Length: 463
Image (tube, rainbow, N blue to C red; front, side):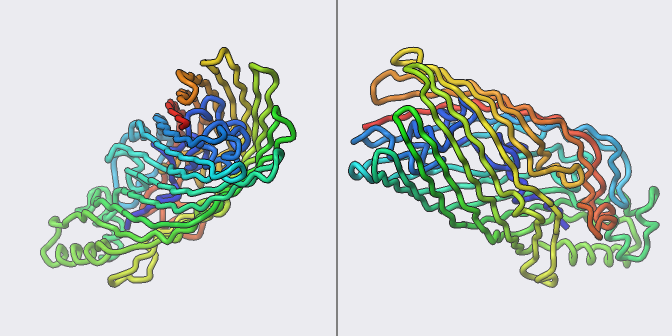
């Protein structure tokens, strides 16, 4: 059977996102230059719809604004083997899988317009979560993961209300779609030999050794959530923002498809029994999984120090502990209602802190820099998986802004992210089924060396 492991919860962009877990912080370019410090308080452009919808109250008065951004993300995720164990019936050595990361692109689009002096409305379209990893198809961990590809699309209409000069409130609704594709090899040898009652057939010289198939799950669903925020501005030089984005539940439905091996190495009667057993266990059909993506909260401060200098910082929380396991269930055929795969995740809630600054060089140019530290929800090598080889990370960011006209603003940002070297000991979780899990999928042991490069561009136009 397909072992999706974190499948839809191993979501990040090309190995993992800039943020820990599979969260995508890359929602604009103006924020990337300060490592997204002050994201819920800056309200520099219409991308505040995502970070804190109350910020629309502080956009240029009497003008509509459109913002388009593109983040190019290049993570690197390299595995080195250190004593991995093959599943039952599989023999020989295999490679390390190459670099599981590759270039991927995160677009976003925002539009905001004032209704009157107190009310503004807006619309944001972006992708808050995502994943793309792919290993060589003959690597040592191929029974646990080959390709993982998750995309989310978030449609977020919002409104802000400014009752006075000190306070602004914001609220938005999110319609969010999740699409996922996940593949890995299938160990047909171990299960088949056990089912035939002839384990010797999967021995080092057995006729059914090294019998592998291939499986892929595809699924999608729409979910609904909300975001809200408040901003407090005691003076024109100081602003505090607090925002919250809700968790979103999905019932992901889709199908599993297998490329089954064919047995021709046994006497005809046994060949027939073996192929019938493979067809019964590895049949194509429908599956579903209950997924809950986490909620987030951000507390930010923005402070203008002088005509040229401004500082910003924030602390954010993500409710990753909602993800404790992932279970896919068949929904048709002979195994209707039975578990296709179930993986213990044991994730924890996380904190992120960021500090940034900006310097207004002249009327046209502004320069930015920022740092951040981001906890990972994966806190133990036994729960780290090849679909998401995540660990704590440190950001260093730089950015620049150019205003060729009063209404047109161009931003560029770059960030390099150091990901703490991490060990992996993926045996399927520390539960009662560990031994059977290792027999079916092997035990992946080793280390990961990871990093992320992000380059973003953005254009903002007020009219």
